[in-house]
Length: 476
Ligand SMILES: Cc1cc2nc3c(=O)[nH]c(=O)nc-3n(C[C@H](O)[C@H](O)[C@H](O)COP(=O)(O)OP(=O)(O)OC[C@H]3O[C@@H](n4cnc5c(N)ncnc54)[C@H](O)[C@@H]3O)c2cc1C
Image 1 (cartoon, rainbow, N blue to C red):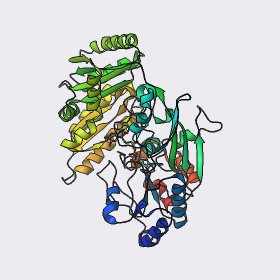
Image 2 (tube, rainbow, N blue to C red; image 1 turned 90 degrees about the horizontal axis):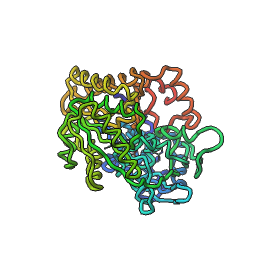
Image 3 (tube, rainbow, N blue to C red; image 1 turned 180 degrees about the vertical axis):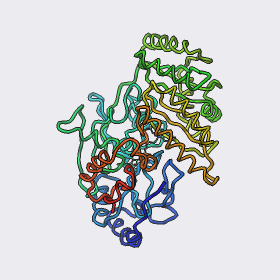
């Protein structure tokens, strides 16, 4: 993975840049000590690192606008950052850039149960949005497994999903409006506290734009009334392919569970060791959750179990209590962390048509053998959103490069079978140079022309999303 050569002229101007930023923000909101900026050298794609020039932590939209305007005038690149949990390297800085972190923007601004929305500052964590409304019987649906830490800002930038997005949709389906600051410091409102906005769907453009178009400082989010009840069932199979075929059949049958999650043996064992979730020791496990009234739950589970039985499951267990259900989800949500305890890994994120699951899982096993690196699978199977975790040894020469090459093959496979390079983690630096697999030069030119409108000088997160060769002239 290549990054552009940092601009030595900007680095040389660090004292002047820091002084200007300090004139705008409280002293502790500007971090320039290299020991402290090191904390921001990477996000959750920790294979790649580079400390930023400076970190700024504004506490309001107005402060954000002042910082961006100043950086624009000084010609300094800015990398927006939420909580730094991106698995695609989206929040990784360059040595000549400023990290603009929104962690201090964490307030709830408005809650309206009658009209079912909440307005928050964008640094608020995903889980604490639900935390703010759950005592009134509401929740915010998109639930990335990182929801304890990740911020709404990052969720919007990556159009994040989660286990329960099969039924409720991803961030873009639950976002009503944003306040965004452009690189020039202009404050713009998109959408609002209502279902749709007049004119072009610019909110849809902002959601998933990976910090390329502006810095989101506030968001209006749809909240939903909690369902009457919910129950997961664990279904184990003796191969990945059969579990994949079962998922495909459930979706084809028109049953819509709230979640269908998949884990294979390496991940099941790691998650079980870590959380004692009570998972059976099988080759592949599905966690399928349905919700509604008791009668609705029973009816849906009967259909799902009937389909699963056609695939000869080796384990089948319905949750018997709320505590057991919570434990089942605790294991799934901790799966990435649990794998991280036993190995270095790179988490991929591609999407495929659900009907292709068995073939793609088989091919991933073959590729893993060809490249000599183990692969664990844990993903949102109902959405066809794959997350192969490639295990490698960061201390072994050449292993990271082999991992990158295997990752590229798997993502190309997703595109070949009619899927997409990204599911929910975004492009970042991880898939940036693979964009030509999915798009031709004209396609990319049009996408870059959209960035030209919002950020004509290409100062916002400039080394991400677009292949460096494609964006070179603009960045220069
Ligand atoms: C253990 C683990 C589990 C995960 N599970 C899931 C999952 O189930 N589903 C899922 O979708 N993702 C998942 N992720 C990935 C990650 O958590 C999401 O991409 C998340 O939305 C990132 O949020 P963040 O606040 O950490 O953003 P960051 O990592 O800080 O930034 C992500 C991107 O957003 C941009 N950005 C940040 N703030 C702003 C802003 N204010 N304005 C504009 N752009 C901004 C950044 O420049 C960067 O490009 C997981 C990650 C981990 C580590």
